[in-house]
Amino acid sequence: MIVNKDEIQELNSKVDYLINRFEELVVRDVSLPLKSEVDIEIDDTVDINGAAKIVNRSTSTLYTRCSENTIPFFRDPGNRISFSKRQLLDWMKSDQPYSETKTSTSKMCKNRSRFSKK
Picture 1 (cartoon, one colour):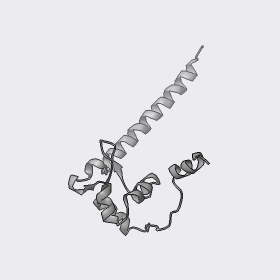
Picture 2 (picture 1 turned 180 degrees about the vertical axis):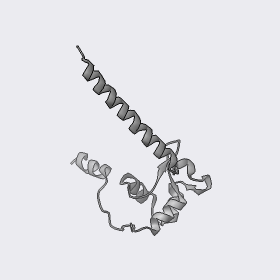
Picture 3 (picture 1 turned 90 degrees about the vertical axis):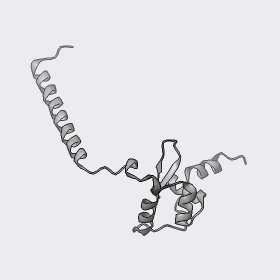
Picture 4 (picture 1 turned 45 degrees about the vertical axis):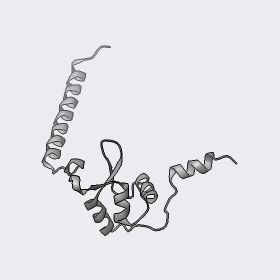
């Protein structure tokens, strides 16, 4: 494959653009305050049972809400579902009211009925 001088210059300019853009994004993101799982205080975290008591719902309902991503949660290093008390309380106060009716059937329920023996 033969590459001429113009093609090399064009590629170099594209690489330079990408490097500059990447640096802009990194600098911008570093200047933003980080809100991550590390920022959540240890005393603030609860497991599924503690979250069920806070929101006054069953653990199975919370597992469903987690699978639908309709409730704030994170996974701890052991891959267990954990919740921040602060985030749960903020979520309960937010404009997204908790729906008593099931809005959608979870994938597991759909697959269970689809593959069940008849």
